[in-house]
Amino acid sequence: MFEQPLIECLKHQGPVSIVTGSAKGPHLVATWVSYLEIIDNRTLAIPGYAYHQTEKNINDGSGVQLLLGTKELEGRTGPGRGFRLTGQGRFDTEGEIYEKVKSRFNGIRAAFVITVDQVEQLI
Amino acid sequence: MFEQPLIECLKHQGPVSIVTGSAKGPHLVATWVSYLEIIDNRTLAIPGYAYHQTEKNINDGSGVQLLLGTKELEGRTGPGRGFRLTGQGRFDTEGEIYEKVKSRFNGIRAAFVITVDQVEQLI
Image (cartoon, rainbow over all chains, first blue to last red; front, side):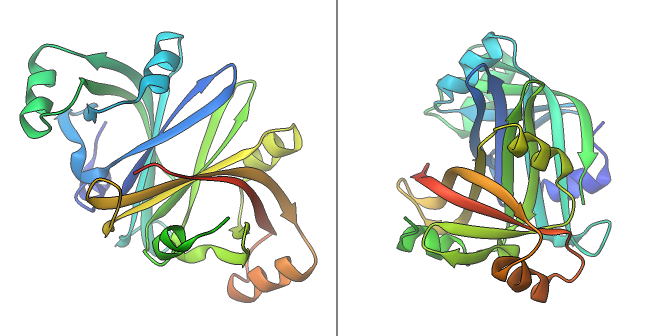
């Protein structure tokens, strides 16, 4: 699922947008690329500092979309590579992933875990 | 509407997420900070290369949210500053804004114009 073009992108700092949906419309928040923990070949974890509306939307059935990119890498049409990841989210407040994220980000309330179903290179 | 902390952020390259909503859920696409044209104190224009689903969502009544940020500037809690902009979008295929954007990005089909109603500094 996570292949080399994405792995390279995950080494370039920048914002990562996090989008969920609700009956009221999309909810858009973010983290930083350097904050992402790669758990395995299809799973990412984000330090869960707040994200209360995001968690509510997930509990109400929303999927999660992430967007990241960098102008520093070549993409499909020249300089600039970006990805949209689509998957499912959950908030872990105990367990191995939570402990791993907490070891880097002590103030978190949870590990926000994203299991990715689809990786799209947009550019 | 656009104040100094945001104006500074607009000088740092990186992805800008663009989110609209529909009955099927959020639609997440992007552009680059350097591609944004500041039209006036509350209006931005994006080179409109595709964004067909985004345009459809807007025509169906969706607002637009943008997210951008950089780790290179100080934010509220240390290094890292990011903004969420909320507003209304339209696709101009003629007129002054279209001509201005087209002078930089010759292949566009439209100028994707965002009139911002709300600026939130998230971090």
